Image (cartoon, rainbow, N blue to C red; front, side):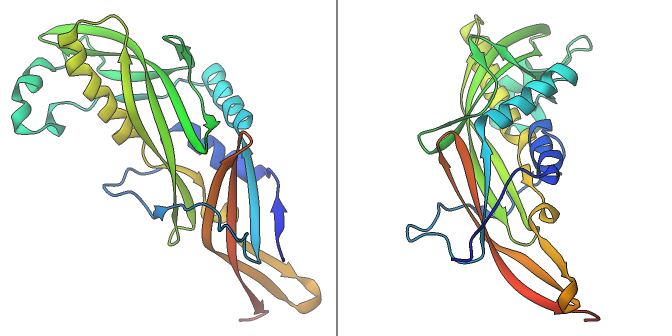
Length: 251
């Protein structure tokens, strides 16, 4: 079938996985890049398809290392300038004081959950434990909790890159008054959805091919035509479909 397999290579580890978990290597965009990645064709992958297998335990080991050896990912909370004029009451209530950091910090674990990825039922779930603070009516409120999120995948042909997008489904705060919860919950949800996305998982140079073939005095090149994906057996399987071309020396 002309199908070959790629293992976990050094470029993939250093580039894709680390950028994924550092939550900050990709410029924020007003629109999401590329198109949603579709599942594999039921008839099987076409000729010239490479399979990249990224296991759940690999991602979570990288994430654990970052929490242990680096600063935990943190994001400034989105405040009143991103709210509509109809939310003037909330805008007045949520004003940062000089002593309030006004940010959310991801934690390795807390509120009964462990931050990480869970590959299950054909989807990528991402429970996120966090702590944070914001000023409500002039009083600095410290809060903790966890969010249930899922991650969808997108492929941008122009950039030759695979992106992930986090969608926070629910936010659960620990022991705060209903009034405060009603203000902070959408703030946390909006911050995570807007500040984190998009997440670059694979860069173009990591999956493109340009191989010199000495006996032919030329190069074998391959551009990524499409990417398909499926979650199965605690692993993310990426099927990279290439368009091959031969280039003679001097061209």
